Image (cartoon, rainbow, N blue to C red; front, side, top):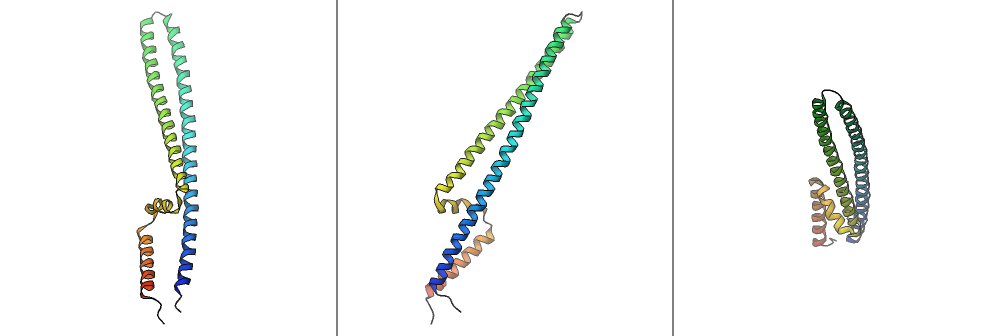
Length: 162
């Protein structure tokens, strides 16, 4: 039995609403989960790097203490040279860790900025949300939608057949 264009239009409208609602729920969940996972990763990374920096500072203090003890011995020059070399290595390692920590903080800031941009999509209405979701649609889904729309338009153009 052929459905009237009003029935088809009503069902298309309902299906369109259901599709928008489902995509919105899916994207919100994925964005929130990805953001939370990224935040947790960077929190752990910052904690790990802070622990490394603390350990480096402790080793540096130990190296300085060892260097001071060796100064009193006959091999002052050799001990001092070794301590300075170790200190330089520790300072270099500390600088690397601090740079990694700064990088983690920059990436965290980028993630927050990206999250703010994603949340602005909600204020942009259904059109922006649909356009932003297009890359996530697979080719088969896009082709199915295009075929269904073409068939609908053909039926609409040919008019009701009695």
